[in-house]
Length: 120
Length: 105
Image 1 (cartoon, each protein chain N blue to C red):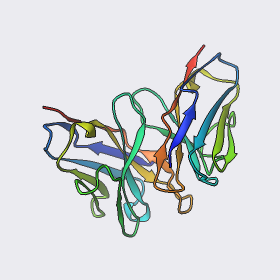
Image 2: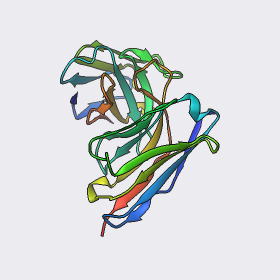
Image 3: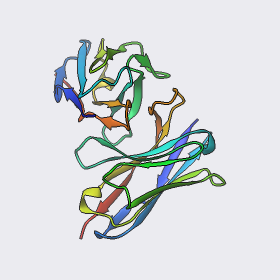
Image 4: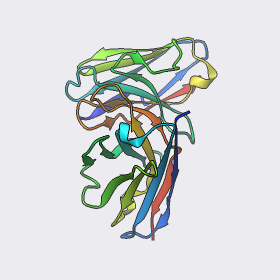
């Protein structure tokens, strides 16, 4: 069964940094594009970042220059390095797999989510 | 592309049919998905390419539309169907609607 197991969230002061991890099971990251999606408290879903199965990284305007997406294929793990965190980055962060439905980005499997809180 | 869902809340009795709407600010062709999210859980993909049910999704879920207007219909509502539903366009980088909360009447 495909699983995405997340870790690394927590409470950080504005301006601080956190790194999120997402370990994939029962599939290889090198065969799939992967993304991060967040959900602020009581709000809807917001796409944050993505990484292609072969190459390429992509970011929402709200996080470009502050967040970095990466992966370690030897560990089958996806990461999101978050720097210069702002109060408005507070959210549950999900890693999500892009399904093999052609070039369009549909998310067919999701991690359990991890809470990130930027507050003083 | 801005995606707008209506209504924000829909109250329906078990066994009845619910129809949820989603509108895109410009044409997304058929590049639209629907997700279901229950409290404390991650979203679950229900429909992709506007009308194709994802693996394991019951046939009581049906979806249609193209261009800017889309709908998700859930017939014979079961207790487990009461949740928040999001649509997501992928004509460009993904954007989601604000969600429709389907509640028990």
